[in-house]
Image 1 (cartoon, rainbow, N blue to C red):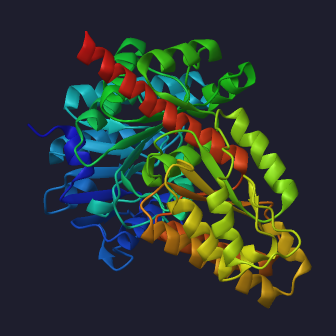
Image 2 (cartoon, helix red, strand yellow):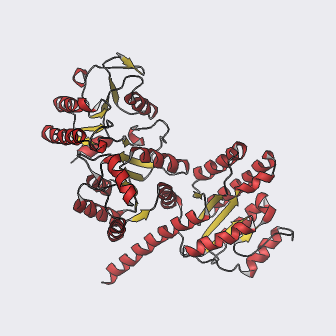
Image 3 (cartoon, rainbow, N blue to C red):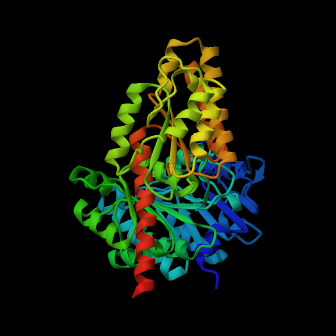
Length: 480
C-alpha cells in the first residue's frame, strides 16, 4: 500500500503557502517551476492574486481542486492553523520550511514544535521538518533550489541540514552524480531519519544512499533501519557535530542531541555503513560508488606529468593500502616505441610522461597501459593543473583538451577502471574556465574525477573495502 512518503515524492498537486514575491516561498515556487513539476501548483498569498504567472489563493481552503502536498513558508505562529487547514482539505503530508522552533533554543520555540507535532498526529497530517528545505525528486519535478540537476539518477540523500543538502546535490551533480530523491528533514518533529532510511531500503529507484545526520530521535529504530539498509545498498554517512563544540552547534542548528564520536564510529561499523568525514569526502565517495567500475584488486598504475607529484602520489596510494607494481619490460618497450627518447620521460610506476602528457601521443600511451592484461587493476591519470601557469592561455587550453580527449576515449573504449585526478588547482579565471571544461566533459562521459590523490585513494579504498566485506559475508553465509 502507498505510504505518506510515497505521496510526498509523487504528488499530483501541491500548494506553496507564503509564496508572495520577496519571500522564501516565492523562491521555492520558482525552483518548482524551473524543475518542471509534473502536477498542479497552487501559490498561497494574502497579498497577490497572481504569482509567477499562476493564480494565487488567499488560503488553502480557497483552492478549488485537491491538494496532495503543502510546502509551508509562513511564519511559525501561523503553522498550527495551516495544519488544521491541511486536515480539512485532505492533505496528508507537508514540509515545514518555516524555522523558529526547537532549534531556536527558546522555551517558546520548543513548546510550539511540540504543539504542531501533537496537532499533526491528531489531524492525520505527516510533517517533514520544521526548519528544512524539504524534497528534491527530479523525476517528479520537485526541487528546493533553482540550480539543481533536473535529470534523475540512482542516489538517495537523507540530510538533516538544508544547506548541506543543496551543497551535496550540487557538488555531486557537477561531477556526474544524479539523484533519485533527496530529503532535507530539519528538526524531525514527526518524520525522522529512521523512517526515511526504512523508505530508501525499499525504494526500487535508489541504489546508493548518502546520509548527513546531526542527531537521532529514536536510536534503536535508527540503528535497525541503518543496518537493514546497509545490507541492501551502500550507505555513506557524515556525522555532523562529532566534537563537543560541533555538538553545541548542532543543537542550535536543528535541536539535535549529537552523541560521542567514538559511539558513532562503533555504531556505523556495526551497522555496515561507510563513514565520510566531511561533505567533500561524501561527494568523493558518491562519485566513486556511482561512477567507478569495480577494480578486481589493489594494483594501481599512475600516469601523468611532473615527477614531484608522482612521488607524493606514491605515498598517498601506498598509505591507503594500494600496490604500485613494476612496469613489465614489454610494456616499457611498447611505450618507448610510441615516443622518441626525450629527456624527462620516466617509464616507471608512477609514469612521468613529461610533455608527452599534453600531446596526441598521450592517448596511445594511456590506452596501451590501461588495456594491458595483468598489469594493474586501476589506472589513475593525473594532471597537476597548476603547471599551466607558465604557459600562454591558448597553449594551456590545447594541452587540457588533449588530456580530456585521451581520458574520455580510453574510458569509452576500454572497459576497465580509470579515474582522473586534477590537482594543484589554480585560481586565475582564465585557467579555471579551461579546467571547468575539462572537469565537465569528463564527468559527463562518466569518468570519476577527483581533486587530490589522497582524496581519490581514500575514497576508492573504502569503496573496495565495502565490496571486500560483502564478498566475505557472502562466502561466510555460503559456507556456514
